[in-house]
Image (cartoon, rainbow, N blue to C red; front, side):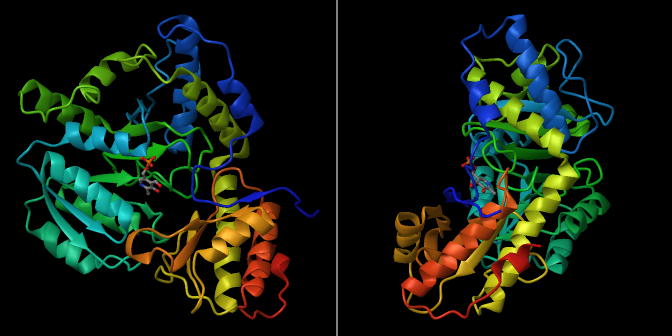
Amino acid sequence: MTYTGDCFLVPGPVRMSQACLDAMATPVMTARGPEFRQVMATLNSGLRSAFNLSPSSPTMKSESWTGEDGYKVVVVSGSGTAAMEMVIANRFRRNDLVLVPTNGKFGERVADICRQFCNVKHIKYEWGRSFDLYELEQQLERGCYEALLICHNETSSGITQDAEAIAEMCERHGVSFILDGITSVGGMPVHPEKWKAEAVVMGAQKCTAGPSGIAAIAVSEHCVERIQAIHQQGDSNPRYYFDMVAALKKGDDDQTPWTPAINLAMGWGAALEGLKNETNEARWARCERMASGVRNLFSDLGFMLLADDGQRSNTVTAIMYPEGIDDAWRSALKEKYDTQVIGAQDHLKGKMFRVGSMGETPVQEMVEGCKRMLACFRDVGHDLPEVDVESYFS
Ligand SMILES: Cc1ncc(COP(=O)(O)O)c(C=O)c1O
């Protein structure tokens, strides 16, 4: 069946389901009453599932935020960046040294946030190039790092880091491992427990198709212990709204320290219910199917992909424009074809476009979107052969 609607193929915020929109339209409730505590319990249980953690009951007063694996989920009112700042501000002391390898804008942002709260060794690889794991190993051998932080799925350059190999290295060297999982959690395999990750962050508006402005953190028992010890020693970085100790005090009660983002929490809970029904495995597979279709289609047509082969992301594909084409193509795609993809950031602005394959996007929408992209490239004078687009997504 041909898809006829608008194609919204950006790497977040993504389209929200009707169930999510309806949930957000629920009439107001108090922030401390049983109705909202039930909302939090549903959200916590959905978050544990999306984070690929052991299950919890979606019922209030049942410690829905935690489970057998000892991890806790903490909901943050704010976007993904707020949640990353909360982890970093609370987990490190001013004199700690952390290692941050990067290959794109969001990794660089992780390094930037760290710089506000601790010392940073920033190893800056070119956007889209794989990390040199040998170099990271040599750094860890120095024995001076408290933690290694990565942007797991680099949305700016379309590369996914080899988290498993990095996790193994961190474990061997006794270094904490923290991930910005903002465009990986819910869209590709993430294994906090297996990777012994201290903290993983996700944003609602990406792979879980929730509303913008709410995020969550999965924290390990060790992370909680370290945060509490630093707090007790009076060695914490300045923070108030993002005080993790205050958030941890409220968690057992399905509460947050400040007025929560009530309607966003309701919407996200409904979106996560959608993910639970689809299952993580099925969503990861759908994202992979869409991304690999896009990768193969555009590569076969002679387009260059920015990210190194072998580590290309399943939730965002970064494609270089052919010679002579720039973002005017994107404007034409939106105006004439009712199809949106996103441009590039910083030094790659105007040189590249990015296609998101996350959330609840149906495969047929991606197929139709790709047909429209090719038609639009032909409109702007880029000669392309006729191809069977559908066959790339079967
Ligand atoms: C990998 C990654 N990290 C961090 C962010 C920033 O998240 P937010 O805009 O939700 O603060 C983004 C946003 O696109 C992202 O893709």
